[in-house]
Image (tube, rainbow, N blue to C red; front, side, top):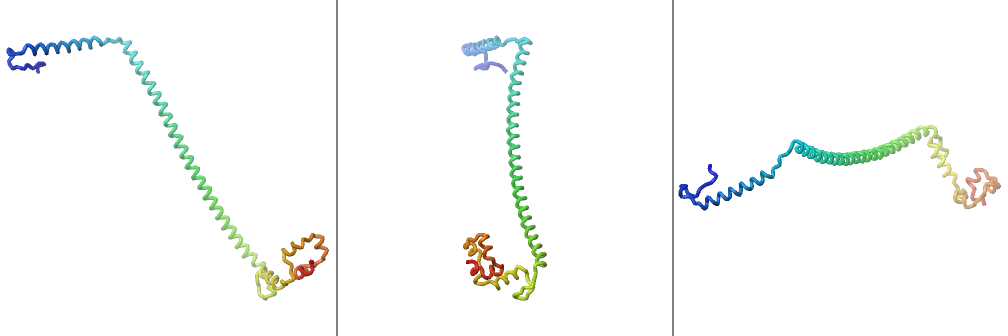
Length: 191
């Protein structure tokens, strides 16, 4: 393949202007190439080694900074991960405290109810008596209530009425009341 294509197929018919124009362009390209080749510096082995050492030092600085950045990123992510795990664990522990507190409260309430029921069933056997009012074998609490109701009179003194008297112990003792008198005639006797 030729560098130049002539506008005519027969070289004797060639155009001299065209040839001069192309030769001028080739001369300009050649001059440009010579200028560029003149800029090429022949480096010595020491200069090449110095350039390599400078590039390695620059790269080492870049790599060192990237390692610092990576360490900081990993540290930040690790701290975030640890903090999240601690928060999750704290919530779990708080929930466990609440759960076991509720469980303990429930257990205590059940144990108290069971103890009361057991005590009531056991004590009931020892607190039964014949009710003198009804003649039935009953819980002593019912018997006491029936007896009080039976013997309650309009002259019995209530606690509020006694408090209103504002008696000292000496003043009360001075009345020299029996338990029966106090219970059934307190309103009359303590005036």
